[in-house]
Image 1 (tube, rainbow, N blue to C red):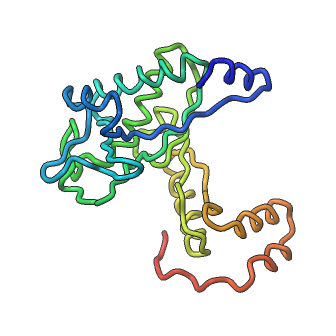
Image 2 (image 1 turned 90 degrees about the vertical axis):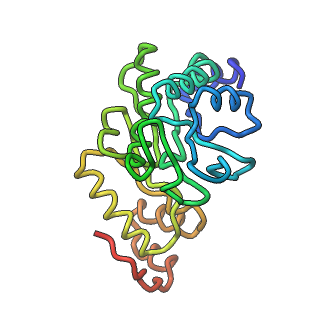
Length: 228
């Protein structure tokens, strides 16, 4: 990423947001160093590969302060120092190829014991780094949150979801529940795999309910899963 590109965008009043994943590819220049220093999520058995997506990857251990500082320094050098002040912190759950939760171990304990705090610590990585650099009013986009994420400037979206009315209903319930819990949320990415839904939302925003009905066609049977 060139400084000139960022400067040109800023001149156009465009603030660039960079998407970050917490995964570290085994071919990455930093992998061996992070592995040696104990900055990656461990497994109690089997191969130490959390996901296989464009390569074998392992997540950095966001529950480890040293790991948070390590990741932030790399992000600061490659992005923040170039004027990028917004981050799209994806993959915040974190996601695994195989959900053997009893197999993953973090710095603060087993996944079964403390795994839900990962997105909070992920947000903390960037919030603390950005505030230490002098930035105020830090807000970053995350795909997941847990109690306390609000403290670290987390603005949540619900991730990539299926295109069905049942899932859409669940999104409304999830958004209301998160809002009542004090978590800021933008929802939802329902257009991810279906362009028809994008047209539906555009029509809905334009206040054309008859157009919505005609484009939606016959509604799908409500999903059996219940949402509260």
